[in-house]
Image (tube, rainbow, N blue to C red):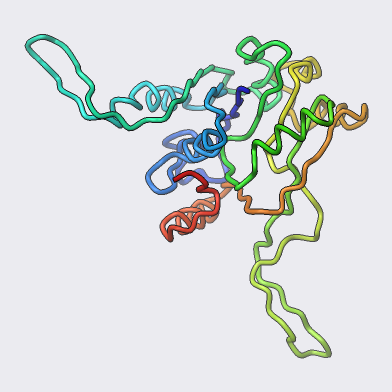
Length: 257
């Protein structure tokens, strides 16, 4: 199965970093968050990626164009004009990088990469700014088993503040950043059938609006609950929290060795 990653947004809420590079290229532990997302898929054996580019897409292209170069020992023979690679340390990825427009919405970006997908074969779709310890193999199996057009991963958003449990004015318990109000939200890890793309009218269509709404109306959208770790990097605060988790050696999304 192929994996489509939406990596073209501006990242306005993390403009401290995104004015220099696209949001998916903001680094956690010295690697772009896009790399972390791809490592998760690769851990489950999914190594074929289609990356939808937009804002500063050339930064992503340059990163992957030089990926092997930066992860290998090499000999440069200036006299012969040759370059020889020796010990290499890179992933078995096939990465298709597609310019999907500077102003396209999420649905429009997906629509523009339709020709890069395998006809009749389901594919993953995710955003370029979220990490989780989602079991992607189980997600794909769930999608195939139910036979509908789309599957979304449902997650409970993490709380942003500590909560107090108070009885008659006395604090009985303090809960550090509990989950939200028990409502579930779109966790950003989808499995889709190619025919879903026909529900996207043009570049200005957010995937989360009419396409998903019409799938739900038609009974074609199923959800798989994920109750493990999930985090979206929307702000500099989010980025710093993910950085701290990675530095601790306890990053929950690091499932690979």
